[in-house]
Image (cartoon, rainbow, N blue to C red; front, side):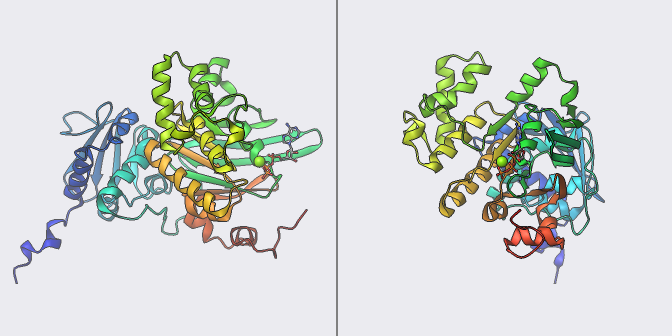
Length: 395
Ligand SMILES: Nc1ncnc2c1ncn2[C@@H]1O[C@H](COP(=O)(O)OP(=O)(O)OP(=O)(O)O)[C@@H](O)[C@H]1O
Ligand SMILES: [Mg+2]
């Protein structure tokens, strides 16, 4: 038999497969494609042992270029990774943090839009959501360029109560990360450090490579518009209807006209399924609707980081599942980094690409979700299985 024209022989090299998949995305007419331009960078993808390369212009109007100029960012994949990438099945933040693929240039800019590209590629190929596998390789420290959020030796006490006792945490750009821990361990306190509402007694917090400590007041304000927060108690203004709650950050932080504000607000409300509730007041909403309104408000300034503090609290299992789907959906639409603080096991299972566990004032474990689920540390096993027996008691 002449095997030269057998179908499986056509795709023996990864580069044409990648190029075809990316062209499919660019030509798909999906309204999400322009989002890829938020990377503000050109990206070249190479595959080990193959001559060709793919040049992605993700600066402005996204397109496949001819590589007539050097790219800002270079990514080197193995042929197998290349094929997974083409189907949207390669979890790039994890692969890069584990050192399983090579890169040069300001990679964080690409990772910001990677969730969006991943989803566009899976929509096209019908593949499942990318897994975060590191093939058993553990991640010691994430390259500075890859981390969206870092805490380095953060200590915080209130009076004599020492809450954070040397928190070291790195959350890679472009993932949905969960931060778990028992009640009262300081998860919300840690969140307040990330947005600069609290300053550490010792140690530092670094966001997108910039230490908060060195930031001027105006830089800190700019940072806060780049981090959307869905607070634990919802924190909707009870005197405003849903529309005005969501419009509030736009009125505070931008000079947009009322008609521009209306467009953005209605767009956000539509994406969380609340457009018909825009004139309702918080006390006229169900718990799940309030959460969605809070999420719409957290996202309305189009922040690169979204923090959700126990978004599931007070929701029944069905609403929690719907909320989890909404979070995953929104992340795939906007990209960036989403951090979800929770101890809801189904929610953790549903959304986590990266998991960190806060316990006793420090980070007990942090890494790609599959690595954390495979951990044999007794506390993690107990926590992730919800078992009453184990090191975690009622105290
Ligand atoms: N501003 C503050 N002043 C004094 N103590 C505080 C302050 N903020 C938090 N604490 C204390 O710090 C500890 C950690 O609180 P935090 O709200 O971060 O816990 P948590 O992990 O978010 O818990 P939960 O899961 O119940 O939300 C608690 O004992 C709390 O009383
Ligand atoms: Mg809390």
